[in-house]
Image 1 (cartoon, rainbow, N blue to C red):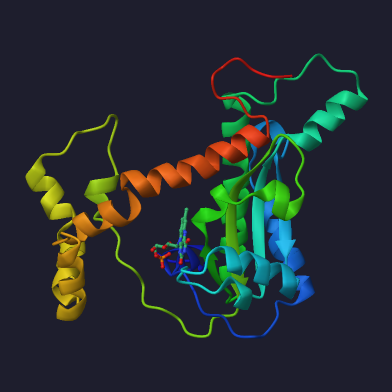
Image 2: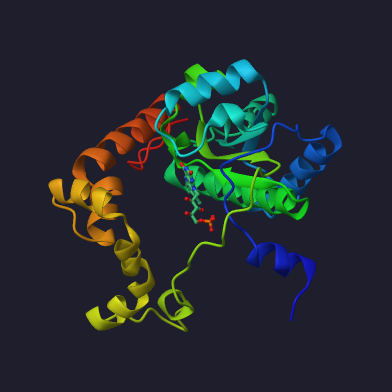
Length: 262
Ligand SMILES: Cc1cc2nc3c(=O)[nH]c(=O)nc-3n(C[C@H](O)[C@H](O)[C@H](O)COP(=O)(O)O)c2cc1C
């Protein structure tokens, strides 16, 4: 069975090279509206979108991630989804409400959930109009107070680049459905099941050029799993990224200890 929505979802691929062609204003407006139609907790829409299309601002952003696989300065539009409890607090204040504990984990997680559901709506809407998209994970550590002038109780939940694709990449692999879907409870896997699930990924190692493999061997890396663990989950990488995230939470007055702050 197929329909245009399913076709769009099953045809998703991340696009990292965009044509210089700008996104038409009416289409951008439609994409943003599709974002705001997403389900959200209590219909409070605990998020804001910042649309970045000013070349100078994009360049400033690109300069922060020089080693990125994508040149952000070339993306026609970048959208940052902010988990935003600041606007809600202002509404409460106008109405002299009871002290609002908007800094607690419950509020932060709900607002991140709202933000990312809305952002994925944006992605699907853009892709349905033949645009390409690329999420950028490192927005979590972006100093948004400095870069966007955000107030307290605002946290960068997600970021996506949008534009018309320069080329359409191949579909990327996915784990088999058995590795992902559990019915009525979680079934822990045996090592041989895990090996089966990751077989296609492990096989990528065999296609790496010998020269690159030799470089990886110098770092004691002899498989895809070892390379991923070292490049994305090492003590240094996770510590550095977490520090940036914790700084953002702290600056925004989010307090995950459960103490709460008014
Ligand atoms: C949370 C998240 C963060 C991502 N961060 C980046 C990024 O910083 N740079 C990048 O080039 N791609 C990034 N991507 C895109 C992924 O690399 C891509 O979705 C994944 O490799 C699967 O490929 P596909 O989207 O083409 O199917 C990110 C995707 C997600 C969902």
